[in-house]
Every structure is written in structure tokens, then in C-alpha cells.
Image (tube, rainbow, N blue to C red; front, side, top):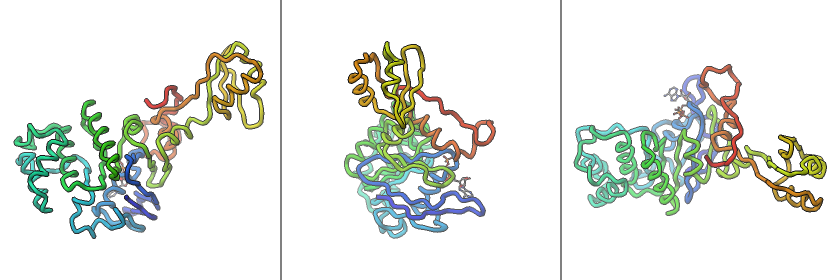
Length: 317
Ligand SMILES: Nc1ncnc2c1ncn2[C@@H]1O[C@H](COP(=O)(O)OP(=O)(O)OP(=O)(O)O)[C@@H](O)[C@H]1O
């Protein structure tokens, strides 16, 4: 478990992390999302003692990172593509790291197998592709068989096969009861990988919820309805808190009722219904919407203007 309480980091006048209180639970993959400069990397760096909080605390399994006698066995870390000794082979690199913790050689073979680098274990790391480098970083993080993994943008540089591989790996490790805290810019990827989401913007907590609830809240209760008696159905559904918009001759968009409530009301009024589709926005759209006021760097639009908020159908892109 990772716990931040009132975590704050200032660099001069810049507040990178602002009074962040979160708990990252074991057993699920927790996605850490936020626009560029939101404070994700700074939070992760403080979790592993690379940066000191200005105020507040962050602990891993109840302890500050510096208090671990064998940190590699408690928390595995992948920050940006690792600066490794490029003249060394992958095997030698992992062995050197293992030896700092008295981790046996056979564990080096195990993690090489786990990340699919066994065949290139003798090759110089300098010749590795970005994707192979990421796999090596994950092998390093897994060396001590830690219960907590902190991964900053682990799918960077991976091809689709690599992205799928990492998704399955993280879900498997979470199912083993580990705490998996992973940042990413790829919202659609997070929708497939994570169960829980922590969203930050300008250092502040914006959302702390399940992927499912995040999308549901962003989508509202919008239901698309098709009926040959759309106008009459609109009258049947009209009540306080419900907005009915006619979106075509035989279609309605209803806000404020679930598909089930609409179906039941239509049935009671003997109005035929041909379609009842709860509209969901994609995680990407939900993210854009929720962070629109927290984006530091946009692509040329005036401040405050939405980056994109088109509603799309078919949820999890
Ligand atoms: N060492 C530093 N000195 C000064 N400012 C810093 C330092 N590290 C980070 N910052 C600033 O703090 C803010 C948060 O940065 P951070 O790298 O944590 O964000 P991030 O969410 O990881 O962004 P990205 O997704 O772009 O990596 C940014 O505005 C950044 O410029």
C-alpha cells in the first residue's frame, strides 16, 4: 500500500504537488493520470526518496522509503528509461543490482524470463531498443520480488505487442496481491489496464475513483432512445430533473433517467421502443473534460478553452 498524506512539493514558487492525500491499495492496478506537469513524476520520486516533500508524508507499506533495509525487496521502481551501464550485458546489469541486495543469481534468470529477455541476456544494453530497455527496467524492478511496484510511463516506447504484454503482466502482479501504481499518458490504455484511477492536475487531486465510475460520472445519465412515437414518449418521460432533447424525427436523448427507467415508463405507456442506448464517453474524453482547467500546456488554443470534449459512443476505446 502507498499512502500520501497532505503531500506537498514546492520548487521555488512552483507548487508541483499540492496537499495530495491518496491511498494506493494492493490487489488492483491503480492508474495515475494527469496532464503534463501535473506532478505525477514528482509524487513518484517522493515515494522512493528521490525528492523530499516540502510538507506532508508519503509511505510505502507504512514506512518512509529511506527506512527500508532492503528497498528492492519492498518496492520495485521504473522511472524514465533507466540510465544503465550501456557497455554491460542485460544479465551483468541485473546481476550487479541483485548483488547489492544479496539476491541469488537464479532470480536474475527468473526475471529475464519474466520479461522475455532471456535470449538477449548476453547482449550489450547499449544496443537495446527503447522497448527492450523498458523490459529490462521492469526486470530490475521485479528482482527483489517486491509487493509494491511504482512505474512511471512503463508503456513508453513499447509496440502494441509490448503494450499488451505489460498490461497482462501488471494485472497478473496485481492479482497476486501486489500494489501496482502506474502513470501513463495513454488514457485508452489505462481504461484497459487499471481498475482504479487517481487523477491529478496542477499538483492537486482531481479524481480518485474506479475506471468504471470515472466514465459513468463523466457520461452522466444520458440515454439515446429511438421510438416511432418519440414525441409521446418525450411527454411520458417529462418530470423534474429529467431533460429530454429531440435529436431526430424518431429519436430522443434523455438525461436524468437510466435506460431501465425509460424502458419501464415506455412499457407502462404502451410506447414501442426500438433502441435504448446508454451513452458513455471514452476515458480519453472523460479525462480531457475533467482536467480541462488543469492543463498547463495546450496546443495553441486560448487559455481555458477545451482541448477536446466530443462525446463519443461505445465507451472504453
Ligand atoms: N527539479 C525541479 N525543479 C523545478 N521544477 C520542477 C522540478 N521537477 C518538476 N518540476 C515542475 O513541477 C511540475 C510537476 O512536474 P512533474 O514532472 O512531476 O509532472 P508530471 O505530471 O510527471 O508531468 P509529465 O507527464 O510531463 O512527466 C512541473 O511544472 C515541473 O516543471
